[in-house]
Length: 359
Image (tube, rainbow, N blue to C red; front, side, top):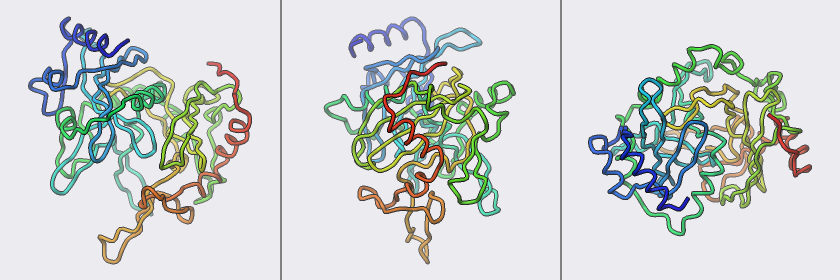
């Protein structure tokens, strides 16, 4: 469809009674988003959800689409439209922002659900960023659409119009993000591996000790469902992307292979339950050290006295700093020791093209 056809279809949807449910500053007059230049130009369908997207935009922090997630309300049968912000993270994954904070002291995008974890014996609350990852099935489509624009307009307004603003200390997302996930988890049949991790590191700080629960390992022989390409200056140029099913077909992986490194995006289920944020309601729990991106935060915070090392790379495995972003270091010393990365290099990168996947 042409952009004009997409726009006409979207207007017909509203004329037929579909309601726009906006949570940002445009909530009182959500139709103003269209007159303000945020008419969708393209669409993507997945399962029973339709995504309408504007052309790509950018502000000083992120590149993003204004997106409209269209679903039918399961209780009323009414079609509802949810304006959202889809943006690309430094790991090259497209995400749906849960909320935002902006003030004289803070400026950041909400990254989804919170989870308690033990860090050096202390329990802390952390954002589970992968809960905002958009479905792996549409990642390539979003990447393609982000690159066709000749000019990317600068936009500092859309975030406030579309997203709910939180106070400076609001890390946790709001109810409309959380409740569909809580409902989905309330049925034990929906849980992946009974809600337990599908991987474990059997020896502390030893990447070679990574193990998968049987059935959840990537199927490199018959599980490759999609191969695509993209580019990234940060990661050294041309990247190949491989979406690969697990052996039991319950989950899926996205592998990135660049000139310097290979890394894995947090795995997702293969289920069709999507929330109004366009993301899956059920997530896959895995050891966080399975999915470290090729470059990750590793720098000295000199705002403290004395300076404090901030790092998301396991101790002793940080490589050289990025020439494009000195706050990030090469995580390959860890990644290249993971058995799953070694197997991927051996079976996929040297044996491409891979055989077709079977579901």
